[in-house]
Image (tube, rainbow, N blue to C red; front, side, top):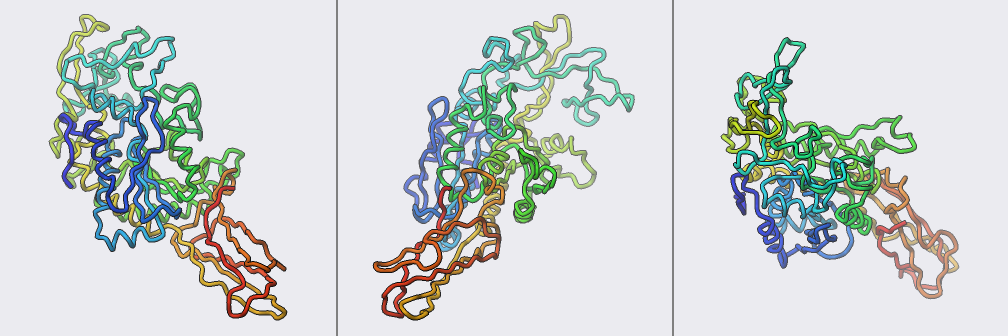
Length: 518
């Protein structure tokens, strides 16, 4: 699929172009565009709902754009929307039969709005924060010293430096390995100046709160960009509130800077028994293993994805441990070494990918600059432009978006599906009837995660038996609640009802099985 927009050499869309693309979806069949809330800067946080009707049904939520340093997730999620809505009508109807898929492509619109104008891709929202906690705000931003419009790396030649030139790529610095007798000759810093003379460069500029550090599970208090307290940001609360308000959401896929799909979540008995649970339950880990299999099969054309650990305060862990949802994450795109003639070290894959694909702007030649903090010293700017490590030029997202749309489709197919046939009614004489009903999960995954039963606000299922006039229960409850049903599991219900109704008319009207807050 060809890209829709262009933005400088990095060629990501402007914020206005992004909004126009989202707004063009309005009025499209089976598609609705709504808002889950507003950002700190007052921007709408859009949600795109792909469904046949408004009736609550098991829903897959795809989320992107939480960390402002990952515009690839934003653009990729919208291309997934296009691919899903471009399916043939019969294929789309089959996919949406009894299910929905919702996409929130831009949780942190403030970051995208700012970053796409400046070309300096920062994580946080529009809140002004004192990242280095020195009582001043935004006093020490990264600075474009050579005027090329890009924040890259800065190297200072110094005896006893810890970095040396890469043996293959002359514009790359790597850490010198003293155990191998390697000698360092450079300090490696972010391009900028030390405006507040604290020995750090570009550590307190624009960037606000990183929403992916602001969620409630394992919240990193007093850490740069994490916010004043857990869920301090309107974007964080809007996303959490939206999930709480829609208990039909079965699971979540996050296009972001973490990955638990290439390597599934593991069950750790000790951590699962702690007061603060920090391991997926055994049954939930089995679901993770199955979904990981679906994922690796769907995206195998992209090569092996890198391991990306969950960081404190991130959305993926909060979605599972605190919101009780199956929670999966993928970076959508990653560089792959395409030279099969030799084994490439993992740390060198990105450099080989840039070289093989001639990606302009990802690795810059070193140019000398005069630096006020290093008078009479050799200082150069260039090297790696960090944003490219997880975000390729837009044209490289077409194939990943196609394969991830395929994964999303497979995951929707695997979601739980509760079915029940007409109740069996047996007359027992004297206007007494036994009514029996069996509910079965014919899907390939559990109806909701086991962890949800440990959370106060959980979506249990209910079966309601509504009586007609002049009928009464002799045995059984009108409303019965039950927990998660695993794939292929069934649950039977029985009532004894007394009432004068001519047989074979049913003496009971049975309500639908549906989700309900507890």
